[in-house]
Length: 399
Image 1 (spheres, one colour):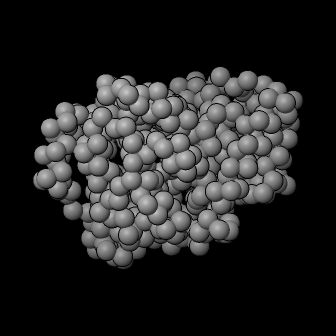
Image 2: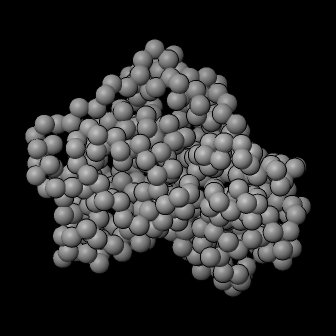
Image 3: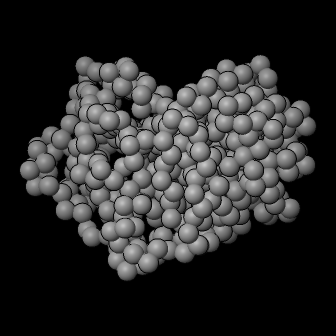
């Protein structure tokens, strides 16, 4: 995968339990709000204006793999991941860091895959122990329970299990939250001279200027963007239809570009405004490095975030390597790599208290406030409304 947007793991509805990150030019450090209980949608607490003192005083220690688990994992001969784009939450460093620490080589399947494609890969390879069978998945929140219901996951509780909020994990260890972020506008300012500050501003942009980072009939990132637009223009966490109506307006005005946006289309000006998770947009901004200049804006209304979850395949060819991978991801060092990629790691609150958050990385995390925290039920209903309603309401294929 060559783009921070190419992960249409932009998961088919995946996740939006979340947090909203305010202005994205870097800004003050953020104390990540605790993930809300799934019983009711709430608003996330305001973020701290600067890095916590405990974080500033410490930092993460290097991860030391459990020797017994490491030996068992090495005997398996490898690890197969799926749908992990290098620039998504800085997975490039997580992948290379794991191999460096363990000596285990990683086969990363289909970096551009969706959450559904990850579950499909497990299903299709139940009897296959070859390189096409994934050991682990990183999917949207809704795909955690979906995978459990289909019998696709194996339970496992990482060493930092107690640091993961109860609302962000399966009680039996079949899936567990990993990181979260917020929907935002990524804007090529060499093409767009007046920055949109809210969803309604997009209706005044030039023709062929606004795009999604995925197909809204099968991509969580795209579904979440449509939902957020609806929340910002008269809808709510319980009413996603206004999002479809908003995109119909964009399409009727010829403002919407039915192209799956990637960093290359942002740079060329083919998709000068892209709706994407903050961490993807910020990674893109860094990657483009001013050529062209990119500004990331969190809209004033309709703030909607998303959480993703990890799970181990019940049919994993390398089950011990899968467990070791999870220990790496949820270690202090691994969590700080996600932080480096502008993602709020799920153990952030506990790490702040322990002083194991890298203060330099914490200072770069966008400030967070005013989070909309939908329930899993709200997510599921919104996904159904948007994925089934897009063809009839908006009537354009995104490809």
